[in-house]
Length: 254
Image (cartoon, rainbow, N blue to C red):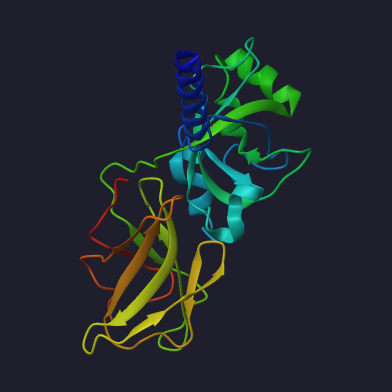
């Protein structure tokens, strides 16, 4: 009797631990649906809600997507996902890796892919044509690390900025799979820092910004609440200009 009870307890403990492992799996695929931008070019849109502009249409070779709930009020901008359709007659086992650059949904989908990315889930060129003809397909997806070889995190000053009264920028080429959840700008001379606002999407703003050369600080967060501040090697110069890009001198890998 005691042996049977012990076996039951061990089995229950195993099943409980297995359930915890299943619910906390960060690499597991999630079932969903995807469509594509039917009224756009092969690449994504340069008017995406993330505020990336033309960069958002061509980054990652044009394999980009809009998302619905995964947009997360802009926090999801720049995140990368592996997406693969589940129709064995047309779809490859690897699918395609996309970057989120926009917000949108339709026909109960989590993703609206660029035409290039949608067709990229197929096994062949002929299968790609057939896949595009379907319009909407069942998929499975998971978050993966972004990779930009030989690129540092880059600051793109938005064209709406006006030195010294208003500064808006987006952050390009963020590797890994953490989210940027907060950004500070600090004056390099007296170390006074200002916590910036997320205007929309991936656009961070300051009105007015701190003066002089500016040191940037970015808070990278994981889904389980692990936060890390990253401070670039290079500063944003005092004479920053709208439309310019500035290499931060740093990159992240996780």
